[in-house]
Amino acid sequence: MDSSVTPRAAGPGPGPGPRRRDRHGRGMRGPIAPPQVPLAASRAETFADLVQDSVERLERRWPQLADIDFLVLDVPRLDGRAWSDEAVPLGGTVAAREGRPARVVIYRRPVEIRTKGRDERAALVHEVVVEQVAELLGLTPETVDPRYGED
Image (cartoon, rainbow, N blue to C red; front, side, top):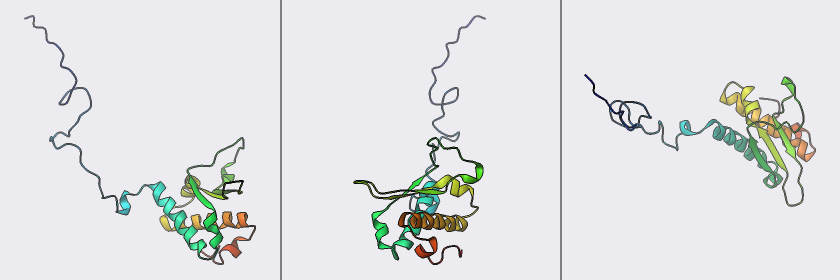
């Protein structure tokens, strides 16, 4: 028997191509949690919140910190430098220039790699923020935060 069958065009349904619905025809499901629930926050957002909490804690004692920008970057740039495994920075500072405020930068991934849980991460973030603020202000970390190193 000689019957020629023409191939179907790819589209919804069984066969090649992306599936638009699950096998029960219900379609894609919604988000796991509503946006206002902490579960919906990304790791980067959660980390930025830890930095913000630390800065707010220090601003009560040092109001001039309101003039400093605090940034979170994923990883430090190499800029022609090579680091050994022990020397990857957790944070840095950029002095104020004409028209630009001073900046404190916290590097998210190196901090996350060195910590196991949220509490440990929050403590390390606060230590790094205190150290960078102390460097920028020309003070010791203990002067910036008397509880530095106690956690």
